[in-house]
Every structure is written in C-alpha cells, then in structure tokens.
Length: 557
Image (cartoon, rainbow, N blue to C red; front, side, top):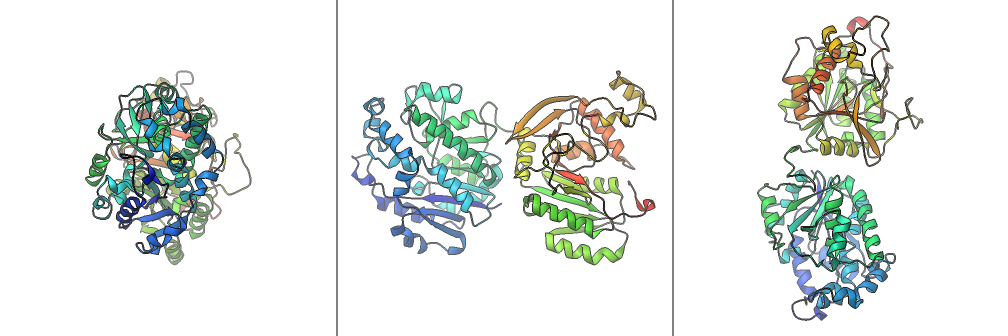
C-alpha cells in the first residue's frame, strides 16, 4: 500500500510575535529536516529560495518538490480578504483573552496558510507522480512535538494505510463552551448538527487518494460559507465540523485531552489504532482491509475472451488491474491455448491456476475456497464473457447508468462502509433483471409456497412469472445509488467479503453445486438475516460470449 506524505513550510515572520507565540523560521527548517529523513514518498511545497534545502536532503526518486511562493496564499481567490476582515474585527479577537495575541489574530498569513492545507493535499493528489493509494498531510514542523524516529525508525506512515478506509482526522476531547480557535461555539454546534465535544487536529490528516477530491469539495464549501458569515477559527474548526457532519466519508482516531499527537503515533507504531466515526461506536463491525482483495477470472478454451475482459478493465477502470491480487482459473481442455494464456497472464499480471474443467460452479466453489485459504478480505468474481461495458449507450434498458467514473473506489467504499456480505453490480442481466425475484424459480416447492403465498405454484409457462423483488432501502454514495433487501445471488460480477464468502460457499457446501442451488440457499439465508447483500442501481458490465464451444463441453461442476 503506497502512502505519500504531503508537507510544506513557509516563512510568515512568526518570530515577530510576542513571547509565547514567537518561533524563528530556522526552528521550522530544523524540524522539516528531521521529517525529511523518512524513506516514504514525499510531495513537498516550499518557496524557491529554500528548494535547495530539500534537494540536499532528499533523493529525487521518492521526492516531488512543488515551488509555491507565499503570495499564492494571498492570491488564491478572495479567501485572504475574507480572513483579514474577520481577524481585524475586535468583536472576533475579543471573544477570549488568549485570542487577541494569537498567531491567527496577529499574522495576516497564518490562517490563509493553515486553511489551505486541504487545498494543497488536493493539488498533490492531482500532481502525484507516485500513483499513491493514500495521501497524508503532515505539518512540516510536526517533529517539534512528535519524535522524528516515528517516521524514519518505526516507519509509521507505511503502517497507516490499512487504517485509512475513510478520510481520517485525529481528535482530542473538548469541553469548552465559548469558541474553538476563535470559531463561536454555538455556531460550530449548529454546523455540526449536535453538541461538539471533540476537536480535529490539523497536524496530520488524510486518507484514500480516491476520496481527497470529494472531501476537499466539502471543506471548500464549508470554509467559504462560514467565512461569509464572519465565523473563523483555523482549519481545525472546519475539520471538526466535517468529522461530525460527514461520517459516510470521515473517521477519526482519538487522543488525550491535552491534544498531543504522541498517543496517536505510539498507537500507530504498535498497530493498535481504533478508528471511530461520528454517530457510531468504535468501528468494530468491519475490520476488513479494503485493499486486501483478489480478482478471479474463470476461463475456458478462449484466450480472446480473457483478453477482451482485460482490455475492459484497462479502459473502464484500471484499478481492477492495479490494486487486487489477480488470478486466472483456467479450466481449458484445449492445450493449444496454453501459450496464449501464458502471454496474457504475463501482460496483465495474473497468476494462472490450471484445472481440468471444474465447471462454472465448480470453479466458483474453488475460488471461494482459494480466497479463504489466502486470507483475502474481499474478492471479485468474473467469468471470461462478463466485460465492463465500453459502448456508447449511457443507460441500460432499465434506465440505469452504464458508465461510472472511479467505479472501483466507489464500489469498494460502498461495500466497506455498509459491511455488505456481497454487492452485485448489475441491475440488468442477459436473461432478465433484478426487478423480479429469480430465487422464486429455484427454491423447493414447499419453500416457495411458504415464502411466496401470493404465487405459491410455479408452472412451465412461468419463465417471466416471478414476483417482484422486495427492496428495503435505496441509498446513494458519490452519486451512485444502491439498494438493499431480498437480493438474489447469481454468477454475475460482484464483490464478496470474507465473512460473506464463508456464509455463502463454505459453511454449507454442496457436492455438486449449481447456480440455482446457491440462489435458493443464499436467498433463504438472506430472509433469515444471516446474509446481508445489496445491488448497485447501475449496469456497468455485460455478457458477451463471442467464441463458442461445444455444448457437451459445458459443465456446471
């Protein structure tokens, strides 16, 4: 897991402040020098005159230097003017006795700088040369209060990724009732939609690169809305509001009331961090690592089918090739295809597993067992004729979107956030769609009569006669809707969690599994509350078998 540190320092003349607030810029250079010892990838913002300071201490292979002069913070929209209007207002700086001599009151560049950290992190995510999975802002002077050895000896940043399932802040308990860094307390509670009893720190924060733009947009809108109302603290005030208001995107790690980050770094070193999110308890219900994932493809006698599937990964969302561990389960009987498969596996990074035609469902069972044996938290399942849609149509025949930008990360966020056992991706399928309850066709007659009293008997003419599927909740994440309820299982592309895999395929095994058998069993377990599925209200993949093989070669198990 590739985690990049983003940092920067600027000389805003803090040495001119009164005793207790004053620090020399050399103090910041000394602490930046300690941070630069880390072997992690770094993106560093700095003024041109200090660029050589970084170049002399860092290897260019894992360092990107971005020259950003101090004037950038003054000319970045009208934020600077809004901040100056508030900080020079006696009604603002007289809220508390400490505020009048504080850095945010006395230095015109302090708040423009600290309030731009999120913008700088977002810019770094766009300019990132390291193909990072995660990006973390670390204050350039953080080693003033955090021992440098955490970075270059304990390598804490490389350990951080497995905890960053959401965008993450570090928070300390707070019991004040007047203001938070100058932001009026009643108003911060108003924006947070509840009583604020913790504050998010600004010294270290970050998360999945895929979420940074979304979180940056939230931050930008909150910052400007509050400044326009004459409300201002520091970046930490806005971070605090975000932690309360957007738990679907944001989690936090708690430290002691003194606000010192040593507790956080010690827990990170020992890998004992506990992620929390507002309006929930400690996130104990989902300890999965969303990047400990495998992608399985089942293929038979057709390298061309497999190649087209890989091309669809490349063109639709390359994360499917870059993030998971990839396996090709090759059931082929035609040995003349071996070389072509080998070439494609090398090209696209698949580990090939050869079996003598386990069949479609036999192969699916093998994949379930292989995923469990190798300890994957999630796995994807594809047959070699199930491709991502690369055509021109915007919507499927049922009116759902076919193309979703950043599909991989959105889909993984949904399955992780909701802790689903499995998440189907396609509403529209080849023979039907998910408006009807197809498990009705496959449950035993006695069960059908019990579960479907409105239609207890199936006749030979009931190909399309299944009852409508019962959905429970329709939700949306990053403009992608999904629904829960009595979702039926089928062998179309999906993501399955470790626990879902056990409940669906391993705790109960069938000597000769069929798709219909799994559909019946998993549906009944879903009704009992033992399995928690969902389906996207989208149709990103399609069935396209363009190379055929003799019907007698087709096996289910």
